[in-house]
Figure 1 (cartoon, rainbow over the protein chains, first blue to last red):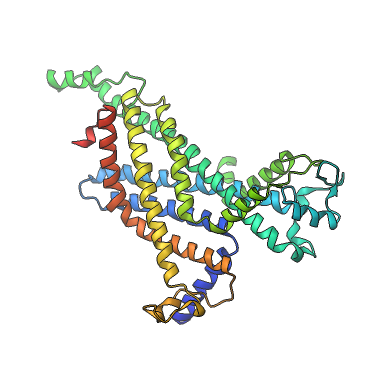
Figure 2: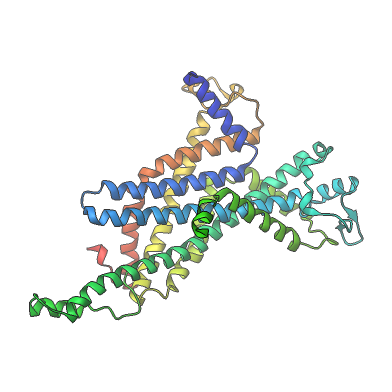
Length: 220
Length: 198
């Protein structure tokens, strides 16, 4: 068995090598972990709450797990796809700084025109990656800091889109659908009693009749 | 059955990779003109992009998310036609309260945790004679070789992981009561019915 001190050093070194050179990746993974932990905390809070009846817990826990899954999946998918796009724009040489452009021009990848730079007619961006070039070391520092910055900008835009636009819309839709179904189920049961009021008092009948759901909008 | 076998064969990573490749091809095709490649030439913009890559930690990221949430989420709730007008107003108040409480605690705790990690991630030549707890100052310092930027991102990562652990508890101890208090204040201010305030 590995000793605890060696395990701790391995943990620190893994964090350093995985996330040290790649801040956007760190922000995405810690973001996913954050969403996961906060959803898990909500589930645990419901599970250990004595004031919530067992029947309600059976309904609320899967609901919370569902909400958590929407949060985690939408955050991860949207954020990482946008971050990867931003990253690829830089590594394919499509988006660059003048220094990187000059390097690509010297390497014969870009051609200087009077308005700026262009690529040769048969050039395929999807097959090209600056990092695989043999003389990449010449531009490494300039390229890395530009790429890390673009990655973090892409990641931030992705998380704004996911957390502040896509997830709230999805959650509102899912919550409304869920409530509609629950109310419809409750009202089907009540409607049967209203239609066939056997074995209930007039008071109870009137109460059920007044509960008949007819409004198109819902109360949360 | 075709549908069951397609569900069985579904792989999240395969679907994700396919989606990424398609999005990549699409972006590479539409971004910029092949005959006039997009080049970031303004030195200020280049410096800002570099700064973002080097200095933006999860705390600032949370602050940006909170600020942009204030500009979008209340409007999404206000235009939610699936609920009635009173519920819409209430959900706008609650969303505003959640954003303010969540951003304030999220930013503060992340910042404090990153600062705490920094105190125990010193390199040997950073330790000064007047420092207390000298032995513990290198407790979290990695044993591999690193650059200053890599070490700074390492501290951000460890600080964020610590903050997430702390926030599992502060979510209930600080966020929840703060959200409730702010919701009550906003509903009172806007004259919105609030059954939860009783």
